[in-house]
Length: 626
Image (cartoon, rainbow, N blue to C red; front, side, top):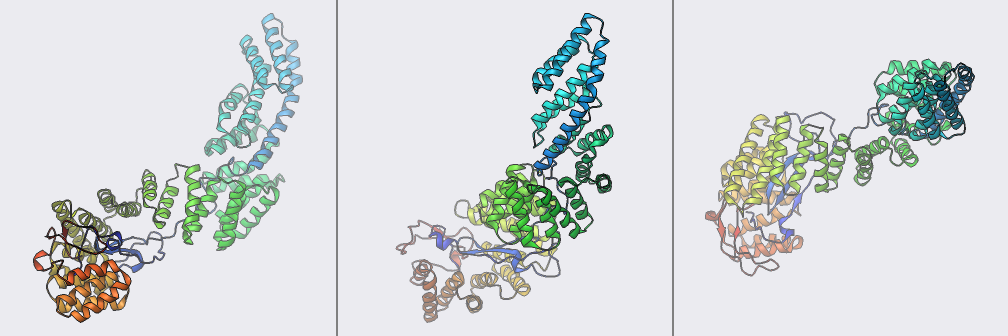
């Protein structure tokens, strides 16, 4: 029999067995025709909490998913190809200069037509604006053009000049990163001159960087319509189409760029991404390599090259490409995300966490990154941090898998009220047997935590645990974890015959399961069937010679059966593994701790325990035997 002593040293109270985890396919539930795989269970077995099992529905180490091949909500026109943006800017500036020179003569002719003093003043101010603009004094130019239009709102020379000046200022403010701060200036520029192709082109780049791809498409298209020399914009236009999911129009834009002889990093990036969408992975890889040859600083091309290697099942090259992307741009979230996935799936949780931390810092609204980071923290047993990430992920992700993992991690920090609440939510989202079994696990452990301070609440939670475990085995008679939870709960309630029946079912589904064997032995001990209890405890400790709890129970059962010799022999084995546990067993042998059938069950107490070596004084100890 197992003695629960709430105030013993932590090393006595925290003996746990955690099994390995294997990968299962995304979206697959555990079939009802077979028991839950051992690798999908996390079992708790200790003097403090007895035995219970939590089940990860799709496996506790289910592989995480990469961003969809070739497309990414992260990939922004301004985010991963800064040098490419510089080339686009240069093209816009060149076109603007040509346009400005072509318009200058027409404006001068218009000036001669001015007859009134007001019109002359307007034209004088417009001329000052032009001189300032030509000298690079953009703010001064804007001031003069605005003053000119105040004198004569129809002064085309001033409105076109103001549009050009605003375009110059907007381009400077946007910078190579295409900052959205430039939008008001550029929008005003096209308001004053609806033929300003350069302003429309820069608006397209800024909207793309902002993630507003429909607006980017509208403005890129208008720029190309107004100025055929801006044929190079077909590449960023195609990338914007890709982000909206329109592969056909993206491919058409690529065709136009190719026919015009355009070969830039953007055009090769577009080609590679389209080929990824078409599963032409070797061609995609060649295109990304060419993009990097044209622009060695192109982090976006390096990232998508990593996706191509992923498709081609070359993990080493995949990781190297993602690392290259992050070396070029340390805050490039898409590469950090997929690198986190690669590290997680390889079991390198420290590096996975570091990668996902980059993503949630750069893209705090990315719920999947928060969920992946939470799972990574769970693997690292950083449960408080995992709970914070699950909370953030749950703002957008509503799946039973997420709430189930969250409930588990809340349990690991002994926040059982919230753990059971999250697991109930998981059940509401997907009422399968595994979720019922996990709710039983939470209520069972909550009862253990409450047993000393609130026996009535503990008993109520054990009743809930039994109810949900019963539902689980009714729904799935092959779910071994549910039988274990049911048997452990019945043992704590003192219903030993029911416990034995449930635990036999668990062992029929999973033979030689030492934790279930130990609980079965507890049930037999509760029924005072010492011979069966000894046989089961002995089998468990033969299977696992280092099973401390089983050795403790075996020694106590031998002693209760009058076999002092074997009891001492088992105690000697136990002492080599856990001296404190062996000392407690000594006090059982010597009668310092009185155990009989009257003291079994929830809420019973025994007298003070004097002189237990290396253990603090305990005024009263509850002994539910497990």
